[in-house]
Image 1: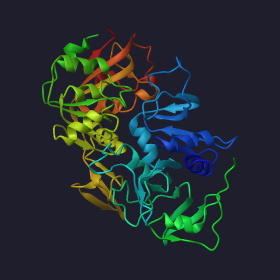
Image 2 (image 1 turned 45 degrees about the vertical axis):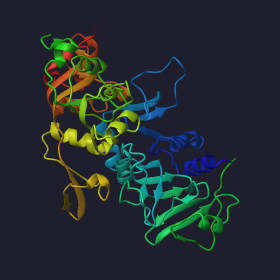
Image 3 (image 1 turned 90 degrees about the vertical axis):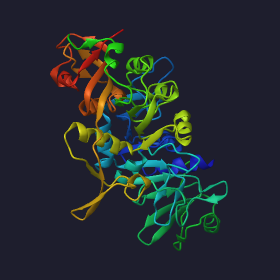
Image 4 (image 1 turned 90 degrees about the horizontal axis):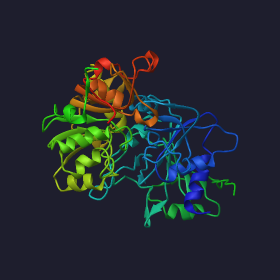
Length: 218
Length: 216
């Protein structure tokens, strides 16, 4: 199983029936492909819809119906559309159960940096600051390291997205939960040792006596 | 239908240097004919308020590529490399605003509110230079209302009174901007007789619209 598959499959286990969920662009989008059978999850796209469905077949697109990246989508039965104030009212008003976002760094307090690399990449924060500040649960989907550098760090060297700690970080090696006492190592990927995780993590992790393996269906 | 006009007549009201809100999200819901008319009229030094700068050659991205903006106030420029290039070269001022805060600042202006109190952006670059306020034990960032001289918006349907209705993900900032600008210019994809848009289905009452551009 490649890194991305491990991450999105594990995050899909955080979904619950009836949840309103916003998925970030890129890897987080793929969580939608792993919704457990029989579970109904409402996916919001922040450009103004609840009930976003898969990309339509060629020739069946509506240019007024896209995801936040501008790509054609469908609207599922029961979908609702609305303006940007309503869309972000859902996010900022505490109505969004969960968001899944990519990450560049997370610090020892669980604070995320994911929206710019000064001097290199300044795309703008889009809805990321609202999502991390307002969603009930914030789950970060990211690889454990980038070009060998740890992404779980003591202090973020990159600009923060929010001062609010995230709820959970899932990488291809580990599941980590920010707590009042620090970053808690909750799970390890199949076949990965605690030592291997610690060796690729800059921030100190609280390691319980037993760290179970992620349970990922094939 | 006294409001009716062609794109060129409508944008003739807009001077160089004006502050112009333009609806749309990645150009979905952007009134492209009005943007084209702005370009053809040679308008420049504009301050454009919108969700993003789309892609080069699309929506607000057209104004960027043709270098018609002195400033943009947006939440995202990542899909338009030309915006980033002009920003880094110091040719274009870019004010980045969290998307929800941008929507609320526009809404605040249109709804007569003195500002927005929000935790979004606290402790980040987005808070730099802005006041904070303690209220009932919580800290908020104080964000100012955002108004404009003109709003260019796109509706799916308009009737002869300029009552507007939007569709799907093409609402985005359009109804908010229709409240927040001194002069509102609406482009409609379809013009229908009065009554076809039922009172319940009117998203923007026609009284808010100053100029209505119908089908070509």
